[in-house]
Length: 377
Image (cartoon, rainbow, N blue to C red):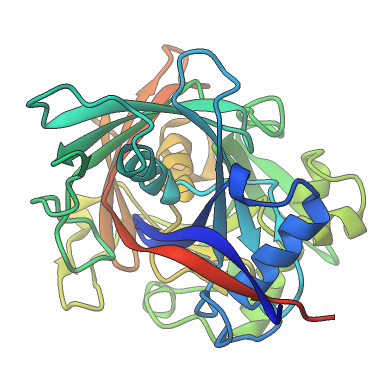
């Protein structure tokens, strides 16, 4: 057989897209699973023209659903970030955007009972990447996720059904504590030293002030995707922080861990215009940030990053908190290149850890069927 066939679905979740498999439809051998993922995405080409990716970090993703191993959840799942232009399958971190799509999958595939007449259903899943339970309220219609709705999410032009995602006690899943290096850490990078904040909420993030890298407000709002010297400098900071935080022990390990920690530029609130021409006023947000994923400036902002950034803006003493406007209430408006996102957050009394963090997403099942996998040698 020239190509093998594997059952799969393609979902958008938030501002990410991924190919979903069920573990029962995959080979048991991890090496063979990874071969399938790499070929399905077409990891070897930078535009992923020969697969289902599209050459961006937020579309080169795979999710494997599996039977539950934890009490009171409907399913387990594992997230994989697939390399672009190199064969790399990374399960170190997770994807906050695709969490919404996981909830939609559980409903669409019938893994949760829907009471007669219900307009929404509670879905609980266990994410094996971070060993955390994620609870979601998913709108339903005719036994499936209600894809059409009135929720307007930044980064997607069509409105959709609002999926409420909530994660309890999300801190320290990878590094053992929410702020493993304290609120601010002086990080040597080559001949220079940068002040950074390393925050481990959902995925570990490294925050650095935009102005510390010479970025004015005007420069920050320009297209930084082709600024290779800046991106390379941010990668050096990310690698140094990975080792300093104890996430990895050597530079080789840090280079191998492409998905975490992630790194982001932060700036006090500013007024800006997104690609649709919508203006976000500085008074509407508490912080502005651009993040890097897989050495590329993210078009919007990763869902895990929104969780993390809202926490960092609330954690006492971090670089983000220093730049943020005072926060009132539990709804945190975050500014990113395509608009703003509102994150629900509850801190503990001492403001050094997070009780829960939540985000509203939309999702859509784009296709379901079989994906063909060539047997490249």
